[in-house]
Image 1 (tube, rainbow, N blue to C red):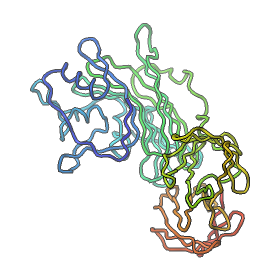
Image 2 (image 1 turned 30 degrees about the horizontal axis):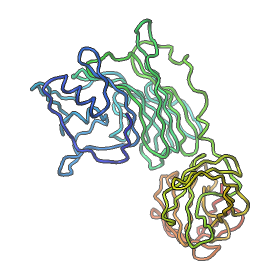
Image 3 (image 1 turned 90 degrees about the horizontal axis):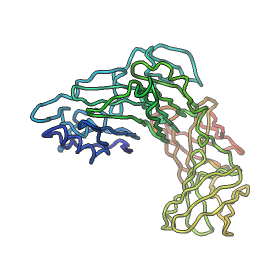
Image 4 (image 1 turned 30 degrees about the vertical axis):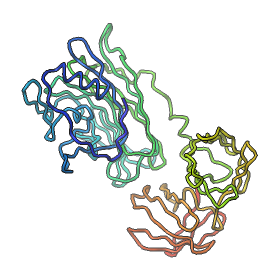
Length: 420
């Protein structure tokens, strides 16, 4: 089962059950748990985004960050089972627990510096459960856990999280191997996967109540963060030491590769009318906001540097051929023209010479700049002439930018940005 919980609040629900059968039946209905022999239950979960629990009056209450425990516990983290009060906060196991409700992995083990990778410091725990990449105050965390509690409940899996910064990962992917001795020692009993884009948290894990627990989990975590790619295998559990010899995916997902197109696709496009469509590109995928035409959003992909395909849900799929300097010619014969009100197209990524990038979105008269790569807030500005912009950086000041074709912005403080 998959949960999408981007900075949402969840109200605690039912936490009193007459017996274990009633509890497992509830989990089957609420979280897709599958019955096990002996009255047990087990399931799989993946989650994208963080959440907190709040009481009816809006007060934040104890949050496990584990949707199973948060679905069956009171505001203070207890469960009533057959009249007995059980404190679910009392847990034991290796490598802590999932961190989806917190800023960083809970029960963080001691970390040691292991060097530099793609401009980030790499830190890792001796037990192999946590690898952390550090850029400034920001942290990219790869974490595996195996946990159980006083209740015969367990969970184990892996997570990728961001802490200390607003710079999200551009993409993340987890591949998990679960090991259990069934007919032979350390068999892989399950392989699971989850992925996410433009977020700060994703996980994949298995859970069970009164059900056999695998001995170990090993997770290949891959992420693109600050436009650099990182990968590690993290693990938690006992025995089964040869997990690194398994057939793990090689490299990074193919759909993470960005195709440089003949024209900058991001921005406003017109069909010759007074209305504009807005195209946004992420890796090889693109979205087209058609709200100005009172039509649903369209989605498509970049095929190569001069070709795109887009499916319009209220119509059909069309192929678009890019014609420099500013045209998309569609397979139905229609043509869109890029709307650019300045001497150079501001849409896209810009660099000040460092590895970080600012992303500008240009409107007809205004613009926004995503500065999250620098751990800075979004900046807003306006187009004052076809070669002049004015931008207010809320953590700094207002600067005037002079546009110098083909690819420069020269700011009034003497610095310069170059189009990437």
